Length: 47
Image (tube, rainbow, N blue to C red):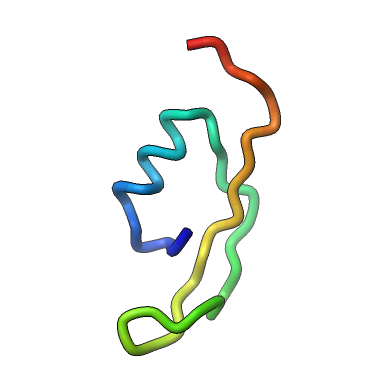
């Protein structure tokens, strides 16, 4: 997920995902290279 996608980041966080790393200059996006987050949900979380 691109680091500038705040709605997606909020959605992932609500479902228990955490940022585990940041990939620099990962992909072309909006005409330039952009960073992306590596995310994981390592433990099941009760709602």
